[in-house]
Image 1: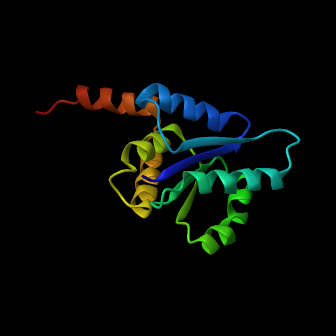
Image 2 (image 1 turned 135 degrees about the vertical axis):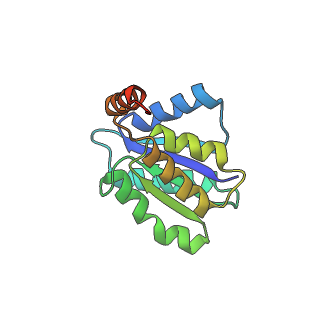
Image 3 (image 1 turned 45 degrees about the horizontal axis):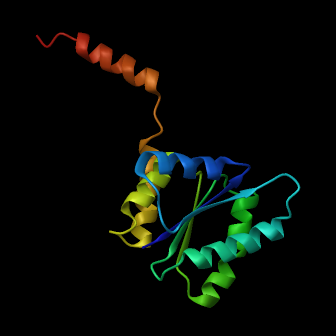
Length: 147
């Protein structure tokens, strides 16, 4: 099973983990880490590396971070040489969202880490919608005469 790790500023990662549990149930090999105000980024890096190792059962680890280029992302990227040295298969996705994470935990037993990464990113894209515009467009289409 592919391990899944969520990493964010503040409690976002813990909140998404809690929401996943509410929607799809308790998950194994699924953890969250938070960067809190005043926390040393080196400690986050250490925690991230240790947690990723514990989540890896041989199928790899998919890590979601909140922002590209921010501290959780940077801590993840600093772990790449260590992961490579250990032969760990790890992917990092930025712009974490609930639909992406639900996709990952629901499909991680049936696809490769590379495919799971691509599917999770696609789930994120598909779930970004302008809901009001969609409703307006749908209403306009229903009112169009077909004759």
